[in-house]
Length: 178
Image (cartoon, rainbow, N blue to C red; front, side, top):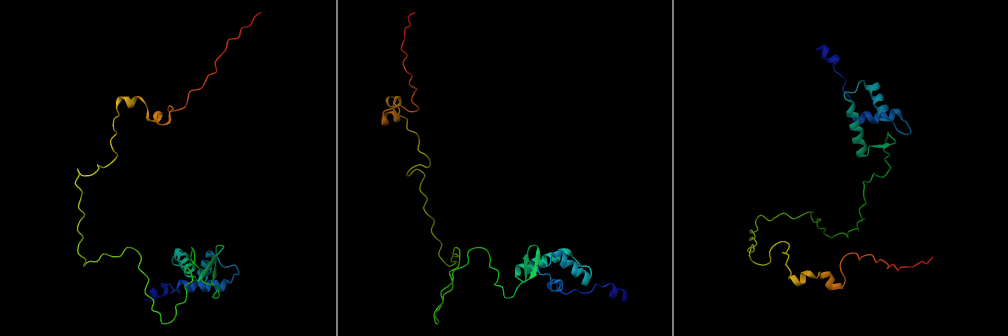
């Protein structure tokens, strides 16, 4: 029993408390790095049980606003500083409500839930497959042979389709007498 009490590691205070004590003791104006904090804790309290826990705790404290992370160093947050605002556009300032006015709760987001007591809707009648227009692109209608010889573009604008042929100048013969 005596050996168990001797080999038992001393109980460490909670990590946030260790970190804040280390920052106070180091008292660096530009803040203390993660390695400096861990070295101080190791020198004061002995070996740390797990090195990754310190990094996780520093991140938690940074996210909650207890610490400020600047240039790879951690500083204690200034109590008089305004709280850190999230990303995006800030919400509009709300107009003050006069006293005595009953404010209704905001409408919930999303689609409203179905009423379980409502009668079931009758299904839509499906059209019969032979009625109305058929689905899809209409079939191509063949033209009569007389209309097929003349293209529709030539009829509408009076000139053939495509790029016009290149006009070649006529050559005139020149006789040379010697």
